[in-house]
Amino acid sequence: HCASEVMKLKASDAVPLKDLKEGRTTPNVRAIVVGGGLAGFSAANTILENGGNVILLDKSAFCGGNSSKATSGINGACTKTQKALGVKDSKELFYNDCMKGGAKHPHLVKAMVDNSGSSVNWLMDNFDLDLSLLARLGGHSAERTHRGKERFPGMTITYAEIQMAEAIAKKFPDRCQIINKARVTELLTANGTVVGCKYTDKKGQVHEQKGPVILATGGFGADFSPDGILAKVRPDLLKLATTNGEHCTGDGIKMGTAVGAQTVDLEFVQVHPTGLVNPKDPEAKVKFLAAEALRGVGGILLDADGKRFVNELHRRDYVSNTMFKNKGPFRLVLNSSSAEEIHWHCEHYKGRGVMKEFASGNALAQEMGIEPSVLEQTFKDYNVVMKKPIDDPDNGPYEAYPSGKTHDSFGKKFFKPYPMRMDDNFHVAIVTPLIHYTM
Image (tube, rainbow, N blue to C red):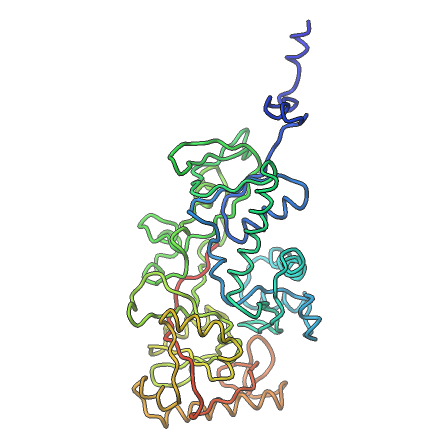
């Protein structure tokens, strides 16, 4: 009789013996986060702060992902930093900028925008991060890209989150576990629901982990294989270089579709206009990125003839497509004021051999193989259109991006008040469009 009553217990009532041994009367279910970049650790830390338990699996030898290489900052509307610096912004303005920039799904944009400010504040409040500097990047109507005074913000933010989770894992190993060199190969399902995953550890042993799964595996921007996702959705981009690490091969997308997940917008691969060309290895398939913040602080783009050809703060796809239509090599040029504002980046790029400093405009012209008078005229023309929006910000004969009117024929509306002079010194990099962001 007792045995028959026991057999009536539902499977969901069962508690593993190892949990009972530890004093738990309910199964110790852990959320499974696949991927150890910023998204993965943000998910893990959010689970932990809300009382859950988590195991994070990453196939690489160390965590960080692509976000650790991000160099411009993190966008947020209505943040504490904006308030402290007197920057006027709103969720509505951010939303409109995103939609004007080509976003296809309003509900996703709204979710991102509505949470952007609180997310930036969460990073500052919980991880003691310095995000006290702001820049206005391409397509933004307000200064809302946050970074700190030193180092690349992606690295700073991502490693702060990693260190927090590692500290929790050390003190409470039953609450948080991080496993590297753990390649997730399959999602486990039951009755059409994902119930866990299968992964292979560094010794080649296969494990099954049960629990809800969060995929934070990044995109497919380094998957150049003939039968890869990029070849299927954007074969025209296979010829380009990429900013993505070799780990970005679309694993999560492939595992999801294998169990019936649907995909959307995979063909919208972002091509970034300013990949840094190393003169010693110009054909390298993986390149460093010249942060968009370099243009946000006043950097200008010049073609092979030493002339401006585009609004430097237009959408990335627009700037990239304009470069494809013009004559390279293209150079990103920062005068001394712009370079000083983003000093750490410039020093880092020079150390990597992908940026060079010139003592004067004449020296730069000689390097470019053009007459100094051509470069001087470019600077004079720029100074004229740079000054007019400061004196008369709401008028001009040309349509501006992202909105309004401008005196710049290329449509640039927001300028740093840094005149370009031939007797100044310059930080200069050769740049080229390359694959940057994928779904």
